[in-house]
Image (cartoon, rainbow, N blue to C red):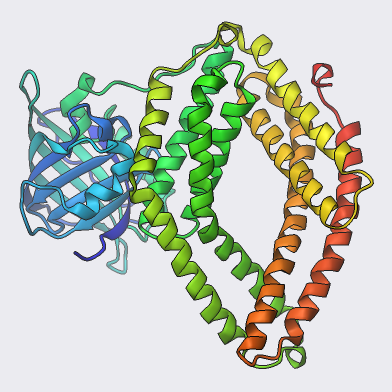
Length: 505
């Protein structure tokens, strides 16, 4: 089956008093004409697990008949007003979710079966809103809905709502203008994110939120839930081969690992040890795909800066062939990991960890008191790593500075976790830590870059390439590394002298 088509959907739903007319929006947001309504009868079956795993994450999966976009629709939340919609045409077994869509939501269903959970029939009256040139700006629909949900007890409902959906090419800010006009006309923003959520209502549990005075454990769990959510969203992107998705997934993995390790005194580190080990495995499986992206982009940027008379032979074509092979191998390895049982088991462990967190007695402390020691410990580990790098040279120094970078990253992640509690008190220290991390990240790029250039020089020579340019870039990276170490030394002094709470040490 072909890959799903994708569209970004920006819309808001509104309650409307029974018997009232559809508001006129001519003159709002550049609208010059509001067409007479075109009627569509839409018949949609919605799918989810029996425990509403998709709905709990704001995801809608349906099969709809009728209207101009009949087919299978998977809607993934991006923000309050924006969703990514993936579409497949009708075909095959009408009672079975297509395999492409099942695989895309595997990180959410955790392998549970997708079953019909609701049926909605909508009598839609659509008004096209266009500008002076006839270009569509938005569509205003007047929807008359009849819904039925199954489960332990059947649920029936009928309602009417307005839906304002921007054309994909329209400016997102126009939503605000239309919102003001619609509310002025008597409509009110719907409290429900979708028709399905309105129908199933309280059957979908709301995610937990920290109270006004959260405990230390509450703050850490909130961070873990955020990182887990980012990992699952990136999972969909990797499967779709979306740009930067592997990077985003690796970041989420690192933040999950870092949070579990840094705050292991609050979320029992013995109970989560297997999770951190498996997260490390997953990061390694994704590493080749991401490393290829970064290395190729960096090397091409370096080549762009080299005078043409110093680039000998078809080096760019050689690089294209080389990195195409590397990218194919890396993506195959990443997808093999995401489709395997080991990854599914990891997701289930993460899900259980967040549903039934192994909190320690220290996690019950007030946030300000319970979070200081783990953060201070992360800061001290960073300082010890820097001290261990002093006096070293060559490969030993490069390895030690890479360790400093990793400790800086963990310290920054820790600061991000406790930001809701300490706010501006850590802002300057975090900024300085991030600067150190960034510089050492560039330094590590030169280390890896020189290894890649050495490999390319050997491989290119074997193919009859003139590899002079690779050698020149290797020397430039060595010089750049020396300058970056000088920058790091200055930034470290700033970090040691910079403002921070006294308790941080």
